[in-house]
Structures are given as structure tokens and as C-alpha cells.
Amino acid sequence: MKRRVGFHVGLCLGLLGVGVQAEPESPQPPNSLDAYEAVHEGNRLLTQGEAAKALELYSQAQQQKPDARELAFVQGLGHYALGEYDAARERFQAAVAGRADALADDALYSEGATYHAQALANMQDAEQALGKLEAAMQRYHGVLANHPDHPAARDANIKAATVWQQLKAQLEQQESQQQPSDQDKEGEKQEGESQSDQKSEEQEQDQQEGQPQDQDQQDSSESSQQNEEPQTDSEQTEAKQQERISREQAERQLREMMQAVRQRKKDRRDPGVLVPVRPVEKDW
Image (tube, rainbow, N blue to C red; front, top):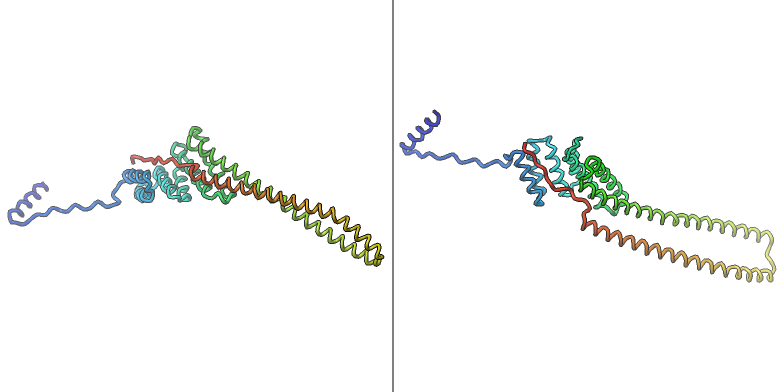
């Protein structure tokens, strides 16, 4: 009935010479995509390296599906791609949500990957890097406990353990090198104090006994010179030994530094861990 009324109204207006203009189509609002469409397009952008744009679409979908674990996971992937590891870790934790399914395994592995990436980016701080690597391996172990055949977690765990062992050995070697040095300084200090006390006692004894005869002084002088000569040779030998040891330590430290530089270059070529960029989707 309404269609007929509309038809007749239009016909009458046409007969009267009044033009009927069609209503312009309203542009589609940018936020009109449903959750599935927004995530699907965001995943496409993410795989093409446009993580920031992907996150914008994920935010649109989140307004419609705030509790979707799949959406939290792809958001974590987006933040990870931008190097925003803390934000990525928060979203991966939301994707785990205490579950024990395949999505939880991938999310837990990806959470470990954020710690792993932070460790590789801060290798100059060995202690901090060790802590990050331990946190990463803890997540990898959690994944492998549920899914022993998870290839990404297994490979990443091996790489993290290798770097951890290298850093641990480096720290232990540095501590062992510093410890003898401190002991030598303490020994030199005690020896100097002992010699000073001995000289003071000798001076007091000489003052009490009086000045010796000239001949005795000459004999004493010759005797002291004879005694000092081997002591001087011993000191020179010890100084040469210390110089050789110091040179060997410097060369060893230089080799370690060069090895660390080569390792960092290798780590940059081989990131060590990659989050599986397999964005998930769900037909909500």
C-alpha cells in the first residue's frame, strides 16, 4: 500500500512538472565494519607489515567483542611487531585467560617471546638479560608441558638457554677476574703496613743503641747493598710477571669483547625468536 501511495505521489508530481530527486546515498561510516570484518582486514594489514593500522581495526572490533580471546591475541601480535613488548605481553596474557587450548599455547609462547626479545635487545646489561631469558624459558616450558611438539616453543627455548649459558659464563669469568685483583690489593696494603711498622721499630732500636762506628756503618752499608740487590731483582721479576698477567688478561678481555660483538651481530641476523604471525579469526 505504501509503495502504491509513493508511486502515485511521484506520478502526480511528475505531471505537475515538479522534479523528484533521488535521495543521495549516505557514505558508509568508517566504524561500520563488524567484528569479523575488522579483524579480517586487520590481519591482512598485519601480515603486510602495517601493524599500526591493524591495531586501529582491532580496536574497532574490541568495542563490539571486548572479551574475545582471539582478538586479544592478534592485538598482542600487533604490539609485538611494533616493539611494544609490555603492551603485547598484557594482551597475550588476556588471550591465555587460564585456558589450556591451542590458542592459550600460542599466546603463552608469544608472551615468552616478548621477554626473549627484550633480553636480546639489552645484552649489554647481562644481569637484566639473564632475568628476561629466565622469564622467557619459564613460559616456553609451560607451553611444552601442555604441548611437547610445539615447534616454535621448543626451538626458542633452546636458543634462550644457549644465550643464558653464554651470559652466565661471562659473568662468572668477570667475577673471578675481579676477586684476585681485590685480594692482591689487600695483600699489598698489609705488606706495606708491615714494612712501615718494621722500619719504625728499627729506627727506635738504633736510637737506643747509639750511633755505630764508621767502619761498622760502612760494613753495614755494604751488607745492606748486597742484600738489596737480590731483592731488587725479585721485585723486577715480580713486576714483569704482573705485567705479563695484566697483558694476558687484557688480551683475553679483548677476545671476549670481540666474541660478544660477533654474537650480537649474529643475533641481529637471527632474531632468536619469532612470534608465529598466524593471526586467528573467529566467525562471531
